[in-house]
Image 1 (spheres, rainbow, N blue to C red):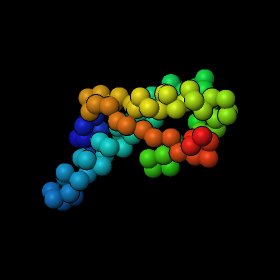
Image 2: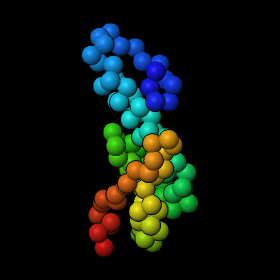
Image 3: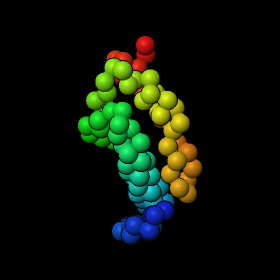
Length: 93
């Protein structure tokens, strides 16, 4: 099973560690993005995820607040805090 107890189905023993890492990383990502979506709910509208990126609709007046939230990163237990960055046309003002 992965780091969160989700069963792994591995045909070859040599793939056990890569599957564990990838499966656990996917769960960390989903848990982190879920937490982030809840935290930014009043500031931005999450639109969709692509791999390790969350696309947002953010009113210009909320960019500064969103930037502060993003700068805190996300905490995903038991693996710790993960840094985040804000990229987009409005994020470099």
